[in-house]
Amino acid sequence: MARKFLYFVAVVIVLFLGLRIGYEMFQDELAEFALVPSADFTPTQPLEANAYQDPALWYSRPGIGVNDPARWQPALAEATARPEELTARQAAGSRPVDPESSELGTSGDVPDFAVFFIHPTSYLSRDNWNAPIGDEEAERVARIYVRGMASPFNAADEIWAPRYRQATMGSFLTDAPEGEQAIDAAYADVLEAYRYFLSSIDDDIPIVLAGHSQGALHLLRLLREEVNGSDVSRRLVAAYAIGWPISVERDVPSLGFAACATPAQTGCILSWSSFAEPADPSAVMETYANSTGFDGQPRGDSQILCTNPITGTFGGSAQASANLGTLVPDDSISTGELVAGAVPARCDDRGLLLIGDPPKMGSYVLPGNNYHVYDIPLFWANTKADVARRAGAFARASGDAN
Image (cartoon, rainbow, N blue to C red; front, side, top):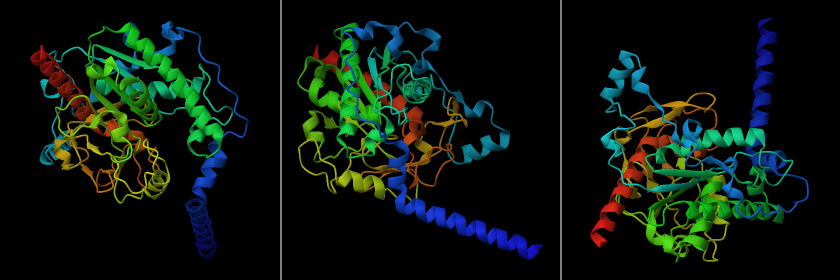
């Protein structure tokens, strides 16, 4: 019996190793097979004029009330932690942080500003190149993303987060022209939503633009084609284009806005992409190196823009004790709690954000210790503080200018 059992274990190990080796060798091909649509691209018809007047086309906007996911506030982990856990956190330098505390600049003294937030990819189907408006699963996941990623911006007077016919995940895994067509179609919706957002807010209110992953890609195009050189550029507090690699050399000069170098700088761009250690970003770096920058040249080995989300500066490092609060999700990632001092942050020479040993954030960590899905939740409280700080600096500078 023991010999049969050991034989069974050996077979399982061999099968596991074979599958693992196969995955490592062909993970790109497997991902493409699983996610890239096989159907021909069907052009997405433009939305009707003023379609975004319909509140149903927004996840977040003024007037939604308690069902607005961007207005969600996480609970504090310390409120339910056991005494021994609190002692351990205090010994490590972490401490409770109230999301409405003056420390985060959210105690009522933040000047008015409006946020336009573009959610990341939540549509994984191979049935269409673009998500149909009303796809139940895609919109369920998108609301979760808005709750976890737009909520750090909710010190704003207004938050606007549109539904849009996003490109399916497989659009980013293929060189076929259909992938680019799907991305262009998604951007057309984002552009219409952005224009309606501008027409709906006060003419002089400062603006924060934010997006993650696919949302960051669309945001960068908005900066290049719509914001740069427009009257809106003078109202831009900051642009948070997170989870999309931006070349310092090949991309930033074409955007018309500098990278944020200091914690109180305004009219600038922030971005980071998170990896735990040991990090294996080879797949990401290969794709990045072979891509074309906004200046028309290959990005190659040019440095990626890395804002340290703990310090708010370009590059550098910060200890975990300076992390005001990581939003640690539950298994469904539909809710979570703030844990202070959870992870550090260090920008490496490539421009990747390294967060130390892999934290327990859930089951959505990508290969290579890529914490892409958690880019914003890892630094939820520091992001909230950063937005409030820059909004305050913008208001003070505007007052001085007057």
